[in-house]
Image (cartoon, rainbow over all chains, first blue to last red; front, side, top):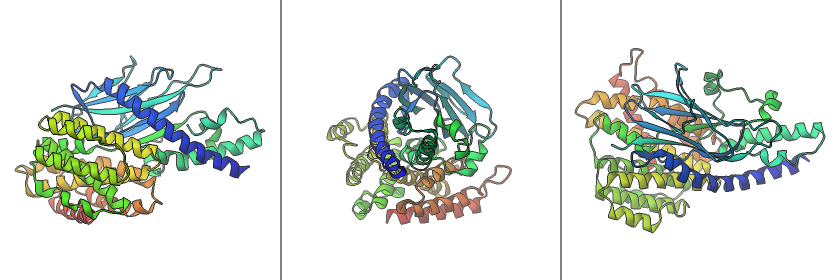
Length: 145
Length: 299
C-alpha cells in the first residue's frame, strides 16, 4: 500500500509540477507583467509563481535595498478570490504595508536596506465548497533609471 | 498542491487516511518544496526567527496542516538589482572584472555550466547597466549558448537576439529582454524538474555580483564608503541564498557551493561592527576570499 502511494505521489508530483509551472509562467508573463506597468518598472527577472488553492499561504523572504524604487506585484488567477498581502519588516516586525483595498501592487522605496517578509493569504473557500485552484505570481519591479 | 491530487480520491478508512496524510506531508516537505523556485523549508533557525508568524507544520500538527499549504520562497536579489545597487553607490565599469567569454569552452559539466551561466548573467546585467553595447551583445550571445548547452531550450530565440541587436543602445529594452530570459530559464528548469540547476545559476550570479562589488570597492571607487556599505548590505540576502541551497544539500553539485557560501557568510557577517562601521581589514579579507572562490568557478 505504502509503496503504491509513494510511487503515485512521485508521479503526480512530477506531472503536476510540469503542468502547473508552464501554466503559471504564462500567467506571470501576462497578468503579472501587466500589473507591473513595464513603461515605468523593469521586472527583476525572478520567477516566483506557483499553483495553489484557496486557503493556502505564501511567505516570501526578500531583501530591499535603500533608495531603490520597488513595485511588488501580487496577482492570482480568477476564482481564488482577493489575495491578502502583508509586508512586514523582518527585524522589527513592523507592518510596512497591508492591502486593505485589495490592491494588486505596492510601490516601496526603503530609506534603509532591510529584509522583509511578504505574506500572501489566499482566502479560504466558502463552507462546503470545493477550494478553487489557480496560479499565484509575485513579481518585483525596479523603477527604470 | 501535491496532496490536492489525492484528496478527492481518498475513501480509505481512518487509519489508511492517516498514513496517506503522513506520506503526503513528508513528500510535500521533503520533496515538494524542492521543486519550487526559490523555495525551501529546512532552515530551522530561520523558521524560529519567524515563529510568531509561521506555524510549525511538523507531523504533530498534521491534521491542522493538512487543510492548507504554507509555501516559503526565498527571493534573492537578481543580477539586475545588484548591479543597480552598486551603480547607485558610485561603482564604475571595469571590463577586466568580467569572466571572459573565451572561457565559455572550458565548461563541460552541469555544475560548471550552471555556475558560469549565473556569472555571465551577472556580467551581462552589469555591462548593460553601464551601456556597454558591444560587450552586452557578446555576453548575451555567450549566455544564449551556455543556456542551450545546459539544456534550456528556447530561452533565447533567434528573433530575440535579432531584436536585441536592433535595439542594443536602448538600455531599458535590453534589460527587459535579459529579465525575460532569466524568468523563462528559471521556469523552464522548474518545468523540467531541474530546480537544483536553477539554484546553482542563482548562486553563480549572486557570487559574481559580490565579486564585482568587492573588487570595485577596494580598487576602483573614488569614494569607497557608499560602495562598501552596498557590499555589506549583501549580508541581508546571504541567508536566503544558503536556505535556498540547503534545499538541495544532498545534491553533489550543490554541496561544495554551500561550503563556499558559508565561508563567505563567515566573512560578510563580521565586516561591520556593532556601530555599523566597516572594518577595512576584514573587508579586504572577505574580498580576497570571494575572489578565490569566484576565480575557482571560472577556471
